[in-house]
Image 1 (spheres, rainbow, N blue to C red):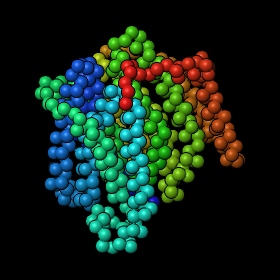
Image 2 (cartoon, rainbow, N blue to C red; image 1 turned 90 degrees about the vertical axis):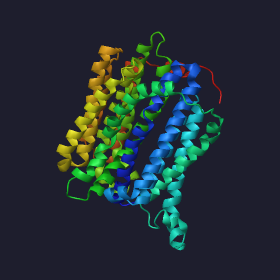
Image 3 (cartoon, rainbow, N blue to C red; image 1 turned 60 degrees about the vertical axis):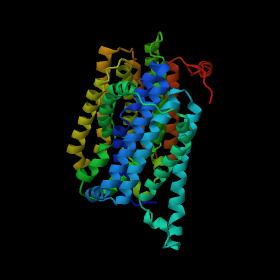
Image 4 (cartoon, rainbow, N blue to C red; image 1 turned 90 degrees about the horizontal axis):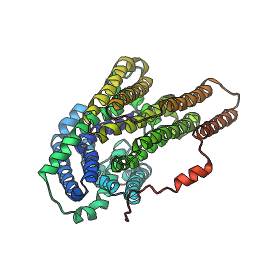
Length: 467
């Protein structure tokens, strides 16, 4: 629905949103999990303290954006009203982050999933309304007050408005919870939270910068052969095709983090953490093959002018697998409270990404950005594992993990270099190889269908809780 350059401008603003989300949440989510699980008798006070803190900081940030929107518009070239949208999105989203975190901490997965899903569906619905119906409506009503907030011709403001509306819906969902909360502020609990969370925030900032910095760099380092906005739009559209991998890693993180904290002191948990890593990697590689082997088919989702960047997709899929591994590895410093090491690990990855983008993006554009991600996450995996073995050793089975990687990459390489005269033959061969990979993992792990079904019947809740 948008030209590549217009979508590129949206991608740049969304990258800034991701960066500021880390700063404005102060790492409170993880700190809240830690101390609400550790000091259950004070969990309500800890939650109230975090809620008040994030409410005040988010409101202050929004006021600053309102005051300086004109200056920010002049610097970035984005209209000031779009800057205000970004400020409002950040303020609401960062405030509701702690409310979503409490649902996870209280082990209410269905309510969490319902609220998150409604937020997503709201954003999707408003995108449909804005892009498919609003242009005709605004053209037919040239004096509508809505023209103060968005143009009649679709542009990236439609994306921002849809996100903002979803944030407002999420906030409304939590109003009953906010009204029921006894708002109490504890300086001692706040100090405890900040001492634990700020190192994670500082570490998280280069981590998120690592995830999004290349999108900001397109403005400064993209090849001059075409406008940087077009190149960024094409790159961002293609890496969106990795959404299934991103969603799985994100869902795993939401589910695993509270569980890891709650069960940290149980006997045999390190062995369980190692097994979780192995199965996590195997499933991620199955998703990798399920998308990469059919990348030309997935490319049809995109508009024709976006498909030229499809070759970045396999690289970004592997990068996301490595990102998931870094999350699993991060538990050693979170559980042992050596959170300062998070800074060293993420900064190392960021440096690698910066160097690759600055040196290679002027020549290789989007491929340099994709490989920057992959190599930076690989660097973080190596450093985090080395430090973890020293301070909080977990018996990860790296030989098996590397074996699974090797088999998956060999299958992809075969698909990449061997061409068949008919596309249906290619897809048939790829399907067979995908199934063979799954069977290989199951046979190697000695997992039968009966074992899978018995594992599925194991209760995952650590205590009973009703919604």
